[in-house]
Structures are given as structure tokens and as C-alpha cells.
Length: 152
Image (tube, rainbow, N blue to C red; front, top):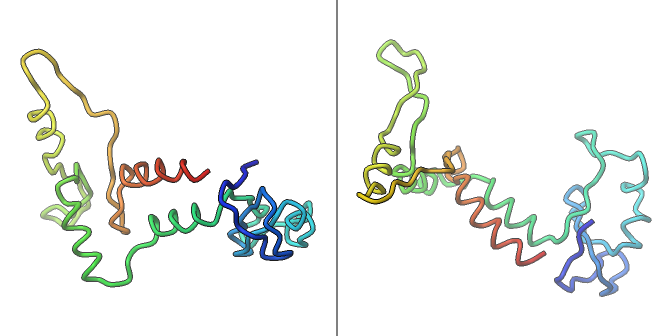
């Protein structure tokens, strides 16, 4: 169980007691007492996906993670994000001359190896970053997630 370090009032009783928890399904911040009294949080109750409502440490964490995983609505903004991430693309699936999906190597791995090799040491990448439809990368998520840990 997580506890919030941010002093947010319970949206049910309006008390500023800690710990508080955020329920993404209810879109509400609860104190521990009000959480357990909420009908949606009763033992055996599940959300639309068939799982119990989850006690999240803080609404700020949810807000930041939603921003990471939600693509921009503006096609021009999304195009710019993809363009700025193009240099981090290692490989992808693109249609070949026959229109059949094929693995395409963008040369990023070779470039990294060339840039990082010295006479005395060699470095090897240990984390691969994939760019998805949102324009966000796994590395970007990890960086932001690292800053979220200071909120918990």
C-alpha cells in the first residue's frame, strides 16, 4: 500500500488526513476511511475490466503517466514528435518492395557503437528504446517515472 506525501483533502469527507489514495476508476481522491466505505471498493467489486479498483499513491502520478501514454490530438504536433525522435529509431517494421512487412535497420545501433568505441574501452547499449504511436519512448517514460518517485 502506498501513502501520499502530498497533503490533498479527501474528496468525500474533505479532511486533510494522510494517507490519501487516488482511484483512477472513480477519478476521486479518498482518505483511507472513505476508500474502504466506498461501494465500488467493497471486497469482490470489480471495474469494467474485471479487476478491483487500485489504490494509487497520488493523482499527480496518474496525471503524469496519462500524459506519457496519451498521444497528442494535433497531427502536426505528433508529426513533430516523431521527427524529433527519428534519430533514436533503431529498427522498425516497414513494407519491402513487394509490400510485405519486413524488419528495417535504421543504423542507430551501428552509429552508437561507432561513437562509443575507444581504444581502451568498449561500451554496449543495455536498454533499447522503442518509439510508439504516442511519440514517447520507453527511455522517456523511465526518465519521467524516475522524477515521479520523488512524489511518492
